[in-house]
Image 1 (tube, rainbow, N blue to C red):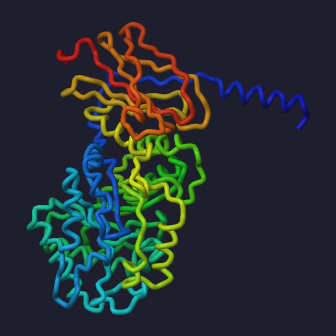
Image 2 (cartoon, rainbow, N blue to C red; image 1 turned 90 degrees about the vertical axis):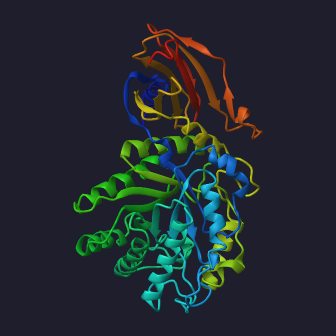
Image 3 (cartoon, rainbow, N blue to C red; image 1 turned 60 degrees about the horizontal axis):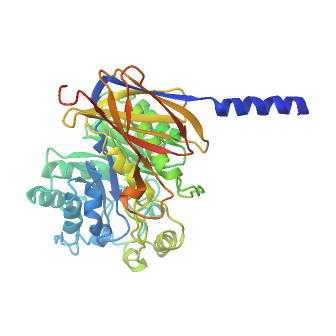
Amino acid sequence: MPARFASLFLLICFAAIGQEVTLTIDLAKKGAALNIDHFALGQGGLSDDSIWGDRIPEVRALHPRLIRLFIQEYFDLMPAADQYNWAKLDPAVDMIRATGATPLMTIAFKPRVLFPKIDDTITDPTDYASWEKLISAMVAHYKARGSQIKYWEIGNEPDLGEPGGCPYKFTPEGYARYYSHTAKAIREADPEAKVGGPALANPDSAILPALLTACDRDHLPLDFVSWHIYNNDPKAIRATIDRKHEQLRTSPSLHPETILDEWNMSLRNSEVDPRFQPAFIAETAWQMVEGGLDYSCYYHIRDYHVQLDQFLPFMSRHGAVFMAWWWNRKPQYDGLFDYQNYVRPSYFTFLLLQRLTGQRLDVASSDQRVHGLATWDPDLQKYSVLFWNFSPEALPTTIVLKGADSDITAAPEKLDAFASSDDENMRVKPLPEFPFSAQQAEYPLTFEPYGIYFWELTPKTAGKH
């Protein structure tokens, strides 16, 4: 490139980078409830230990509507023919209930009685009548206990098998058959239960079209469809939501909810900036809202080492060794709490998201790198605004409030991913309050890379709305 064109190119780039961003919050434009508790959590597939049992208060503070739970073979639900054992699974269900959430129960176990050979490609039990009896007994047990379980998910990453941490690898036809028997057993025990799946590892797997065809043809219940994605680009995650809605339009007789019940950054994440993941979570939540997703379950609550001996009884040695290698040796970034049970900065994004209670407000940005979510809570008589810069660049930004019918006091906080302390007031730092005039409601801000701010806005007319 000639020098004069290179110089012109750099000038254009610098001008674009320096262009000011405007984020406008319309306080008068109130919509439906944001239902922020639908941005929920998941855990499991690693151990029958109480993985996050000492973090119940911290998880409860996030107010998730659902917490996804793997029903894995180490819970030993069917130790012998016609014998059922709920002793190990009950505490895991009760732990979720103690947070105020309801369990999303993911069926991903293979009793040795019904699957005598260890092989993830063997996906039909030796006796479907016994399998149905077991599933019905489990659903009836938790209904009788008052566990308030609403969602039953049939399978986990059935397109992947043991590398996905579960002992099933289905063909599309095999999954549809297994789903039919399992859904029937769930509904016989609880006619009001919601059943669905397939919890795909690959969102575009052929298993889902086969399931939709079977449900349409055979009038099978399908209350939700589910899938997973790990990607550093929130737009790639949004694209899976858009594709699922398009896919469901080909089956107009079915009206399932959409649940993205495993998501996070890339599993081979190369981002080293501690600010990235908190901003990634906020941006992905925004993409989910805009895409019309019904529920999501962030994977997961806590990183945890696995015990090889727990997986050898129901996985091939190769599969069990892979599980131990992946979770015990490879770097992990998934948990809101790390292996040593320290709080990651990502926890505090969820803590700020849960403050967005009430009616959603309109938020418009002049730049796709900056987005926000805002609500009006009529009980608190306050506005809540969460906004972020999902880019590695500092951006000059002006925050504009529209539709204010009185002066407003802003109480701002900033998420500090660099703080060395887990103290909440260090991670979510309160900043000096400042006033907004109803006539001149603008605030200039230099938005640092991956910055996250929360503003609580109190109108002088609070109590009169």
